[in-house]
Structures are given as C-alpha cells and as structure tokens.
Picture 1 (cartoon, chains in turn orange, cyan):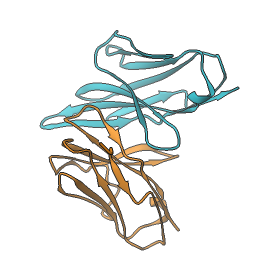
Picture 2 (cartoon, rainbow over the protein chains, first blue to last red):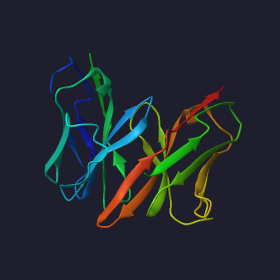
Picture 3 (spheres, chains in turn orange, yellow):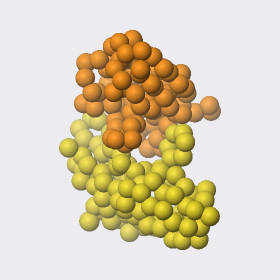
Picture 4 (cartoon, rainbow over the protein chains, first blue to last red):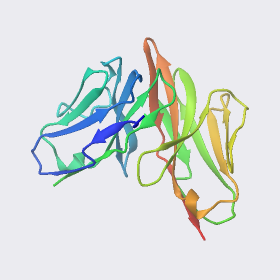
Length: 112
Length: 114
C-alpha cells in the first residue's frame, strides 16, 4: 500500500489566488481528516469525513476554506481566495473506523 | 471544547539522558490517546493507549495512561540524537454517530545533543 498520498508537496501562490490541495486515502479507510500545522497553533483539525460525508467542519477557519470528498478514494481542500496567513503545512490522514491513523506527507503552502 | 496540553514545550538533553514528556487532556467522550513522533515530515505513530495503568513499550520508549487524572507520559531512556523530533500527543474522542476525531497537543520539541 502506498499510504496516504497528498499533492502537491509544495505550493507557492500569490495572495488572492485559488489553491486546491489533494488527498488519496488508504483504500478501505472510511475516515479522512484534514489538518493544518503552524508553529503558532500546532496541529489543528480542519474537517473530517466518514464514508465520504463531512461529519465535523467546525475547525474550518472561514468561508474561504472548503473541502469535498466526491468518492472514497479522493478528497480536496480548497482555499479561495488565499491569504498569507493561510501559509502552513496541510496534512491529510485516513483511518479505518477511528484507529490506526496514517498521515500523508503534507503539502507545504506558502502564500505571498 | 476539547483540550490537549503538552509539557514541556521544548527540552534539550544530552545523549544517554532519560526524558519524560507529559500530556494532559480535558475532553468529552474519550476513546484513546495516541503518541506520535514528527521529524521533518508527517507524524509517525508510536503508541495507542486506551486503558489506565497498562504500560506500552517499544525499545527505549514507553508510555502509560492515567484516565482518572487525565494524563499520559512518554518516557525515552538512553536518548540518542536520532530521538530529536517533535513528540505529539493526540486524544481520540467520539460522540453520537461521529467517531475518531483527533485533538492534538502543541507538541514537545526534543533536542538531543551528542
């Protein structure tokens, strides 16, 4: 198994642009999580899905952030418009029913 | 709001020292507590603890959970420079039909000097 796959690994964009981060969970895992990591706030849960359905999006900072999971093998996190304060590492993780969390390698986003 | 607090936030030791990292939590519907090690990439899993008083061991690392006092400790004996990393504590909670939400602490930055 290739693990949780995230793309791109690095993204540099200008303020105001739309950014889309992608995640492919481990096959058979029915939970998918999006996290953001910064020095100031550590790892924060943004949103998580169970069986492709968003369960808790209370961590999504504001309306500029949206996440979708159109099928069991793919999820996106979109920021539109992006701002410099969105610069962080974004992690996707998947889990089979709440145990054995596996993280992807992360996407390092820099908004200039 | 669920809260996970780790201490210390950073720690500098020399090779061979023993370190103890702390994690306390205040959450609803506790399910389990996880420890992760993070170097320059994604966190890697160390331990999952669900029952009080049962020590988990892996080589020089060990961890234990106290569900009455709501904390866990991670011990590393005979530290090596390769142990330098951020150690993250996370608590899994469940409520209603939802399950498996992770709340992370800020992490402890451990630096081991030769």
